[in-house]
Amino acid sequence: MYTGNADVPDDVFAEVLSQINDFVRTRVMPRELEIMNTDAIPADLRAQAAEMGLFGYAIPQDWGGLGLDLVQDVEVAMALGYTSLSLRSMFGTNNGIAGQVLVGFGTPEQQDRWLPGIASGEIVASFALTEPGAGSNPAGLRTTATPDGEGWIIDGGKRFITNATEAGLFVVFARLQPAQKSGTGIAVFLVPADTPGVQVGAKDAKMGQEGSRTADVVFTQVRVGPEALVGGDGEVGYRAAMTSLARGRIHIAGLAVGAAQRALDESVAYAATATQGGTPIGDFQLVQAMIADQQTGVLAGRALVRDTARRYVTGEDRRIAPSAAKLFCTEMAGAAADLAVQVHGGSGYIREVTVERIYRDVRLLRLYEGTSEIQRLIIGGGLVRAEKEKRS
Image (cartoon, rainbow, N blue to C red; front, top):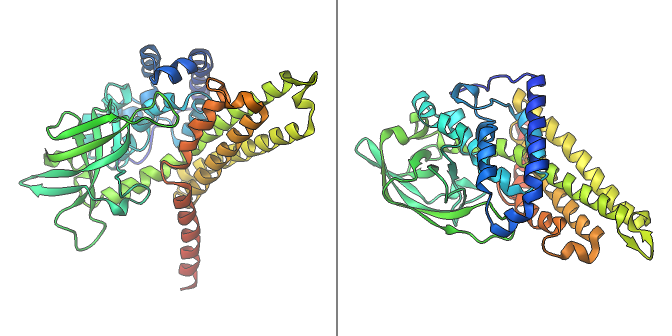
């Protein structure tokens, strides 16, 4: 197992982050309406993102990535959250929940086979976990993997799979058959998208995040060899899912802070320039109160994300804090977006006004990588279990 990313010095990372911020503000933000109206990321922006190394910024340098650790990752997430969230989604699965399964649990052969292409953007990896009856809780998986000679046959269907329509590789979670007598019985497989029996559905029509593609994926008698089993171990699946999701929750929390910052900035700019009865609406105390609530949430969220990332990297807390950060920051971003629409009044409800898009975009943040309700169960249940263990 790979034990850690190569260190990127602070001065080097500062330059990387500066380049990302410049890319977001000078290249992407002017084209947000184009992304929204065409429901696609322009090819030239994708090419520039790949050239900058964004498809592999969290992949270790050993395999051609930038090698950023999670403390640095969340700074990147906050920068990317400032614009259309679909931009980040384009390479989010490579760096996050799909790529990190390989980084953390893949065999050396699997890592060498897939990670260089993932880091360069030549290969898009999709995390195929969610099913109609199993999303936030992987224990409900119905997709099966049945032994067949030295390999496996995979059958089942996945839903809402990000980047499925562009994927070159699916990281597929399946329940081993026959049922295991002990353990979770969940394994993870590397399935190339062109494997016979893999069928990708039409892209979903979503409420927001235009330009981000999700779709159903069906696996019908998909035959894979022994090299497809991640880690070469049938018991690695559940742990891989939980580890990748916990790390991903911190990243999503950072993304939410970036989006909330944009909602706040749009609110302040509008309040300072829009007038009511000849008076800038920002002079009204109730408008100032809404802006104050946004600012407070952003500051609290940013501090929480940074502290949680640090504690994850040190190994101090890789379960409770990620869920707490994801819960607070995504709920906060939803509240900030709602307040931004309120500050804008009727204008905030008009399509193609920035805060209207943000309002729709951030709603998804409370759903994926585990809903807010699941995060509350993880936090509350984890604390109670820990206390019981102390007393036993």
